[in-house]
Length: 290
Image (cartoon, rainbow, N blue to C red; front, side):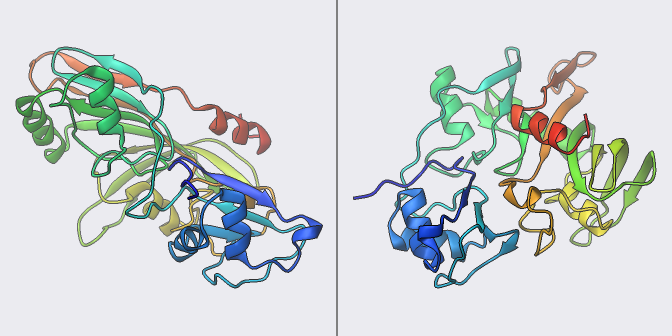
């Protein structure tokens, strides 16, 4: 029986001349080392792109030279995933730790998640992720070491007393040096402050600070501003014209910094910083945004 690839299997494959005319489902099964049924699950999840275009037809015939990108891996109920060797710790005290989340790993509610890996790594079965990052978003993620610590931290988030800063890369040139996006998401107020670090005609490197934490807030706000996050299969363009950007297999979004008053120690500050991951730096260099 073939094994499923790990959840962080963000990959891109070029179609060889000998593979011309091969159905997408068969091509993926061979490249990912999975069954045809598992390959179809990836296509049905709409995380597969061919030359930048999302394709959801399993029988789609590929042409030589095309690039097939898989943004992550949509696990089936029987999927087998490998545990990351170790999660980096950016901050830790008696009540909390801030993990340096890698791409491709869900934070909880899965047999293999950041939460389950950290419980094993720290030897603390009570450890709990106390807020969320998307599967392919990287960087600062706060975890509580006890139920009391978790409840205190949840209150801080509900009262919007947390400063969260992200780095991202978006399509196109962001013209303003600084701007604010104040647009509702799902009927609730959402506020994002955007600072442009560097921009050119192709893409822009942004720092985004959010005061609210709506679902997919940054990705949705930037898409509303007509500058979606590069590599975003959900809110980005259906067709990516630039062949180099079509190879990007995850949204470039990184939680670079988090800061708040310590939930259990009034007068103290809980703060952590996460350096940009290597693949983020490589894309900044490739897009001339460093």
